Amino acid sequence: METGTSEPPPPSLAKRVLVGRNPRNTLVRAVVWVVVLVIIAKFVLVPIRVQGISMLPTFPSKGIKFINCCAYLFHPPQRGDIVAIETTGRHVMLCKRIIGLPGETIAFHEGRVLINGEPLSEPYVKFPCNWEQPSELIGPDEYYVVGDNRSMDFFQHDQGRADRHKIVGKVVP
Image (cartoon, rainbow, N blue to C red; front, top):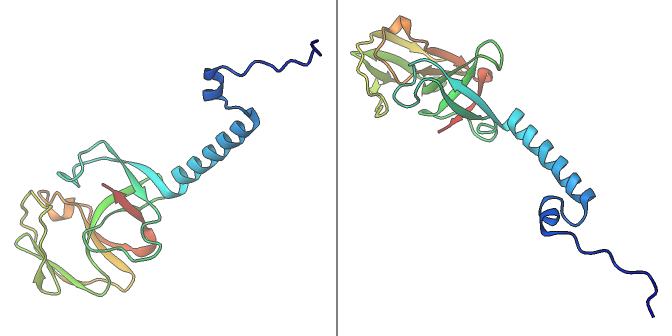
C-alpha cells in the first residue's frame, strides 16, 4: 500500500553543477567570491596600461600589467624593482625602475649610472645612451627612478626622484 509521500526526483547533473544541491548556499558562495574579487581588483592587484617607449624592451607599449599594491607592506622597495608611481591620482601613473635608494648619491657619466661613485650593473638596459648628469644626493624618503629605454635625450625622459608615499606598488612581470 502506497502512502503518497514519494520523494522528488534527484536534480539533474546540469542543475547540480550550475546551482548545486542547495541554491541558497551557492548564492552565498557566489556573492562572497564577487566581493573577494572586487577587493583584490581594487586594492591588491590594480591593472595599468603601459603607454610609451620608456620601458622598452622590458615592457612594450600598450601592454597591460598589474601592480601588486601589497608588495611593500613588510619591506621597502629594492633597487631593480619596477614600480608604479602615482602622479595625479590612481588614474595616471608612471611605470619606472628603481635605481637609487634613499641616502645614496647618483650620477650619470658617459651613459653609465654611478651609485656612490661605483658603476651600476644594468643588464636590462639594451639601448645605449650618452647621459651626463652630476652627482646628486637622494633624500631620506626618496627613490631615484628611470625607464629602461635610455636612447632618448636625458631631459626628454621622465626620470628622477619619487617620494616613497607616491610609489603605489610593484609591477608584476
